[in-house]
Length: 240
Image 1 (cartoon, rainbow, N blue to C red):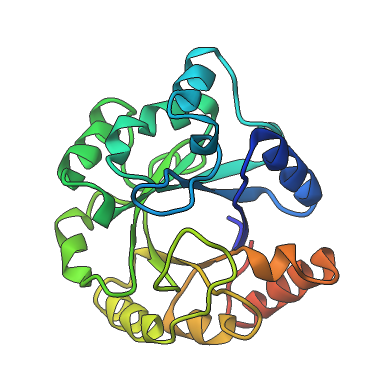
Image 2 (cartoon, rainbow, N blue to C red):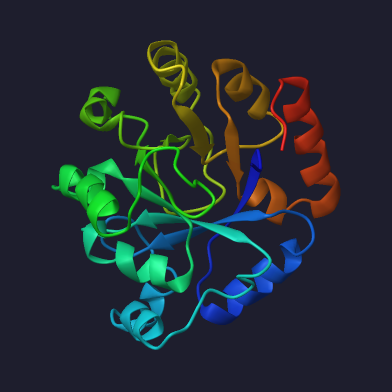
């Protein structure tokens, strides 16, 4: 399991390929941020290319680029994610993150993962894992009915989602600490505002995976920054 997961936010398929190419040989897991322009904005690939682009790709037998190089976590910042989850799995995603605020049917999504895709918590996680993301200001009580069915929870570290480079909201650390105390067996990952400055407090609070976007992409030396973060997680007992 990669503890440090780079995140990419592509505006086009070509940009996706370019950003993935920069991480080749450095990591095994990548999170692709997917934004529809409705639940969050501005729209990213594939929504930036038109509302039918995702269906065209998945129905045409395409796969995500570098599929032999990376395991992909798709962060679905989209309205009604239940309508597109199958398309992302068809493209090769093995980890699907759904924002619980983005759907009126979280229970249906859980059932679909079981019945349509054969998902069961902790069973063959390298093939398919599923978790809910939750915004800074959302009460974690909304997650309670689904704790036994999801593989992880992704806490957002910024209030405004959908853009890389937003400032970290320190209040999320308190939410994570309380949630981890109540559910010590649930894997926690954080996305948004994660850097070498914010990582120590998050790891101390019980976070197992750190999703890192701009802090890596805009680092003077991406490889050095990634290695630094990996070394840092080792000090907190988090290892690949």
